[in-house]
Image (cartoon, rainbow over all chains, first blue to last red; front, top):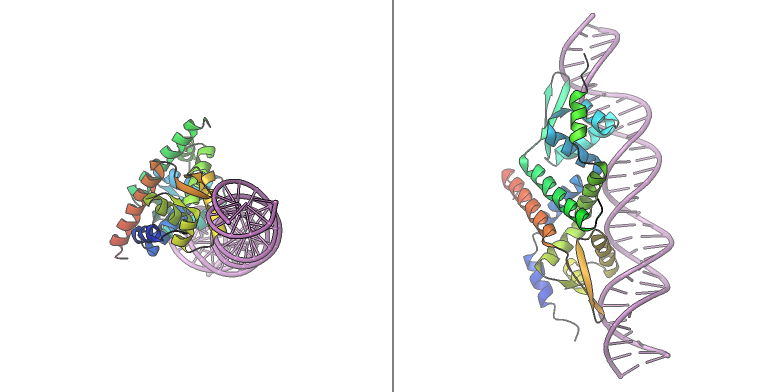
Length: 116
Length: 116
DNA sequence: ATAATATATGAATAGCAATTCAAATGAATG
DNA sequence: CATTCATTTGAATTGCTATTCATATATTAT
């Protein structure tokens, strides 16, 4: 008798709106890149200018600049100009919180599987 | 006088190990896809067989199966076979927690920017 | 105004990843 | 055991995205 589709309909109804899910996907894909993750962790330590970030990540300035733009468009970081340098910082504590939360998740997984 | 590189060195030292950062990036990129997000949210409601997920997302079975594999490889979901159907469920509460946390983040951003 | 420093931008390339298509596997059923 | 149902798999395709290269903009100093 195949199945009733009732359960499916209920699940669909409880699902967040497509727009929200898309936003969520965007958000995670922005932080789902090792370069950007490094930038975020670096900034969680202290605000930094572009040049400093390049040194820390050991990457070309252009690449960093492009990724900073992605992070900025996602409102995860902000910047202010100071003379000819531009200083970036995290835009709020929420991002850090999510990073830490996932960081713990990863660590737990690691210890569980002995991947240490 | 350029700058001292001291700050940079300190930041580098405090950074989690590359391996951990890579793991984190992987983790977020896995959930940084709207299809997989939908699957995860659906499963947070109740365990589901593949066919049901296809109906809920209105996508081809093969595509779903491929994505389920990705989620499984990342240990975000697990499955058990029951007759000829395979039933998927979230592997632990941690994932849900991170999803909810980000969900709130997104919601706050939305209200802040009036994007509602 | 010119040069030097710091950052941003646009176009091109190259690598990856999501979906589709076709076929394979696994389990139940006549 | 042949058939049907549920799911998986591999290969091909197509679209996306990170990085590079070259160039542009902005700020300060000479």
